[in-house]
Length: 192
Image 1 (spheres, helix red, strand yellow):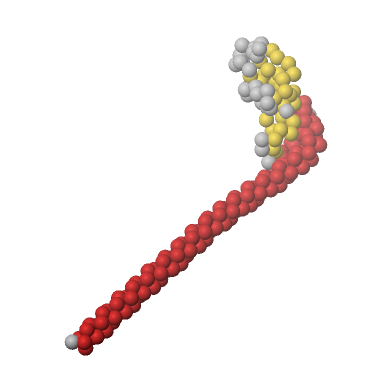
Image 2 (spheres, rainbow, N blue to C red):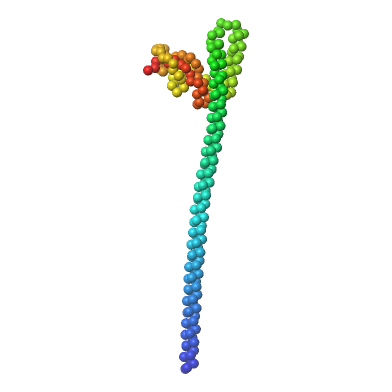
C-alpha cells in the first residue's frame, strides 16, 4: 500500500509537472502571440507611415509638375509678348509710310496710270508685309465706335448713320493680336 501511495504521489507529481509544463507552454504561446501582435502593430505603423510619406511625395510631385507647366506656359506667353512688342515698335516707324501711300492713292486718281500703278504695287507690298507680321488695320467708315480702340477727334449729327457710328476716318488704326499699335483717329456720328 505504501507503494500505491508512492505511485499516486508520483502520478500526482507527474500530473502537476505536466500541468506546470502546459501552463508554461500556454504562457509562452501567449507571450509569443503578444510579441507577434506587437510586431504586426509595428509593421502596420511602418506601412501607415510609408503610405503617408508616399501620399506626401506624390502631392509634392504633382505640385512641382503643375508649377513647371505654369512656368512653361508663362515663358511661352512672355516670348510671344516680346515678339509682338518688338514687331509693334518696328511697325510703328513704318506707319507714316503706310499713311502716305493711302493718301497718294486717294489723291492721284487723275495721275498718269503708270505712276498710279507703281504706287499701288508699293502699297500692296506694304500690306502683304503687314499681313506676314500679323498686323491688322482697322477703323472704317460705318463701323461701330469703340473708345478702347478708336480716338474720337470730332463728332457730327448725321441721320443717314446710326448712333455711335464712325462717320469719317482721319487716320487708320493698327493692331497686332489684341495689342493696339496705333488708335484709329475718327469722327463719330450721333453720339452723346
